[in-house]
Image (cartoon, rainbow, N blue to C red):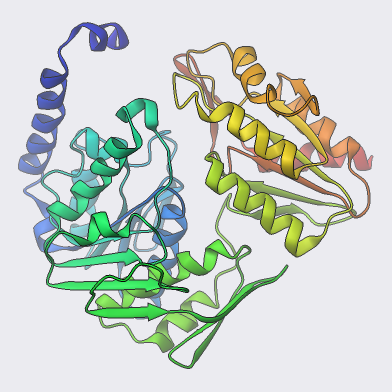
Length: 419
């Protein structure tokens, strides 16, 4: 019913509907963000990790923090999973979350901000003090109409934030976010390829990514963080830059980050022996390539077996063959399976992904069967990489959510193999 209405209702009325809901939510909960320091983290990849790392840094300083990401909601010691299949909740939910954070004594709220959330005015009537961007690569093209419009949606967070802006100076799109006025501008990076005037630069020296951790130094302070992948150095830099904007010293950042044991569903090692199995949320070409390259370069597997799919519901159909091509270029064996078909035919999605795998792909509709097949195929020294779901708790199919956890299924099927 709702989907049918969307097709016939003019877009400007839909925009006003979302705008009005945001206004009413702020009005009903008495604009709690005005009494909090609110930090918005946007970008294509890395947002959830940055929110998590930033939260840990602030807690290390002794702050009571609220944070909201695609993985979980957190208010102080209380946390619960985000099962909405929506990173940035709409309607009254964000304002209710901020009100609860304020009433619980939180001083900071750290929010993952998405382009779809901005498009639907979910960022409106939230008083953002800090806007930070991780990176920008093509994503949600069909939802926005073009990469430029996708970028414009992200930019609106910076337009709405007047105090502090934080940019990745190694991302070619940084200049589009830099152009808006702010009292403080902090740039971070490794190579600093974008020559933009900022108030302060956070630069990582001597960056190293190994099979156990990432290492780098900032202003003589050496960091050893238990996260995998060179890209996680940038996620650490984003979090450190946010912390510096709040006058948190590097020593505190180091203590917090070196306590991190991993991020749920992000390069998460689920099985270690006799072969390794990794789960990652990667569902964009940029993220998927980084996951594959990290595993190939750091672990040198005898054979890499990759299980992947693609979201449905009309979501970025352009990238399905691109994901298949990336798998063909990086993996020894490929299994294409169901992911989140929504209202599309899952077999058609699988065929679109498999099309560019140079005939290397097995097509297995049932995701559990696909995982079982990958595990049975693997032997000592191999690595199985299962992407697209991460720590998500359901598969979205038509108008229902089927309970699901890649990690739980992997452990269950692995135990059967052992028996």
